Length: 331
Ligand code: HEM
Image (cartoon, rainbow, N blue to C red; front, top):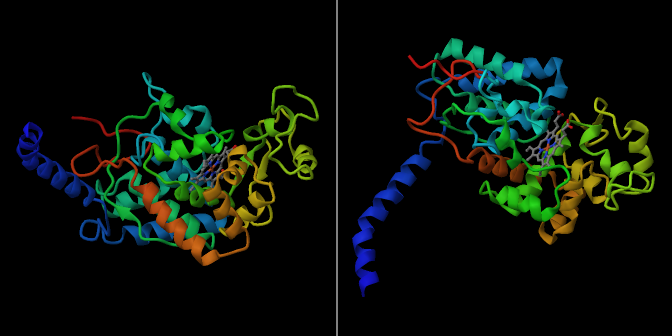
């Protein structure tokens, strides 16, 4: 009886809480800038078309930037901030040292600032750039929900939340769940590895030193034995500079062939191989190894929208940065 009374007393409070959560959630919307910067998506698309026409291999890095932004402190542009005298920023942490494309974001932001000063966040520019990078690589397009605000904090130590290329499936699922993303999102978004390259150092332990024995037979058993010599010919154990295509043959084209490689146990990372060790992710890989492009494209857009919603700042939170690499000065 007492608990019923308590429930009734708490109801109005719960209702207010629920309505305010709903109001916050509705602040991200398709066309958030339709009145304040109606051409923003055209400006981004035009810049991206020019940039990728001369440097198509930047598509992968630009997609990855949005992912690394969203997984640390939410999609708040924190990955773009430079370190300061008193702070080591996310971009200097190990998993982010291989990120590229920061110059592109500054270039696009400068164009947008010229048309609409102090209006469009860097976090939204990252989301729009990632969408256009995929579309210009012959992949899908999707409506980008905008209205994110930029954070003022970026800590190298927080990049531990990024999934490791050595992770097993349990780890990957919990990394994604911690961001409110599902097992399906994991299977779908891993398909982002259809674009781009990896440094040997991100997977060379699979080739030489998987269990720490450091000899020629010490290979990740999840890797196709016939693929090992090919990868070894490209990468020594200590090679930190060579890059290898993750989806050889079509690493600049967004397609389903990543799943073909993973199904043949030729995914570059242990994390890619781990998708074959869970019934749901395995089924997704196997079905898409045979094509099903339209379904993958639809799924990828849906999962990118989910990822783009992770812990966003909205309303009066954060700020609209003037330059993406530095927080605004407080007067
Ligand atoms: C599932 C967990 C994931 C892990 C463990 C992982 C790990 C990695 C690693 C280690 C690299 C190579 C970095 C290097 O050595 O240069 C890489 C590259 C890349 N990742 Fe992921 N990733 C994951 C998920 C994602 C997601 C969700 C996306 C986007 C939707 C993505 C997009 C990319 C792209 C496009 C590249 C190529 C970047 C380039 O060409 O420079 N990854 N990833």
